[in-house]
Length: 257
Image (cartoon, rainbow, N blue to C red; front, side, top):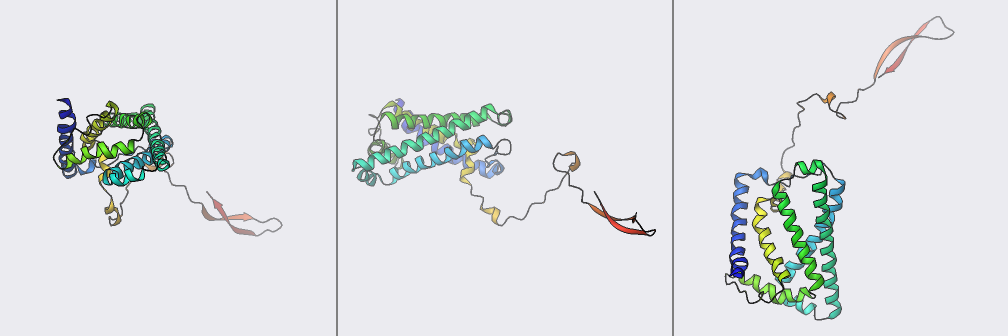
């Protein structure tokens, strides 16, 4: 009963929710399609968290997509032990890199007062779901070896059965609980995705190529804003300066600031 709920009903509900809410949000609240970057509030720790996170998770996701698209070729590639070891080690290393990145981003968001002030409850939920997902993936890679092979033979047929509207639980029923939790958590992430700031990934800002320049108007007194007051330019004035040894006064330019 729970398997039907978690691995049949939930996937379709998550996909429906993701599509409907994403489109509705874009049409009615398009301005919210933004990452709401906190780089201006704090950038040093963001760099050390964002870079490893993005590199690690993109490579891992690419591996999942390749395994889903061409499972037979993956199994053929793994037929040589040396290549299998290289593939498994590479996946684990990039998974660990993503784990380091997400932990750094979580620490940054909860230890910086300025970042914590602009953190919403959805940000917290998304970070925790991503953390659990990466931990489960790394745990699976460490304790259930040759995941690239059984992913191609077990998980991929199940995922493809969802696309054909003929869900088949036989393929994932014998999988370990950690692996099944990893799949379940992916559906949970898909369900909360349209409510988060991550929707900015779906929008490519190509309109910036032809958007006119923006005019910035200062409403406040720039002299009262530290670092924004314009520097006074030195002015040249004519002044009468007596010349030594001569009774005649000469006019010389004097620079005043």
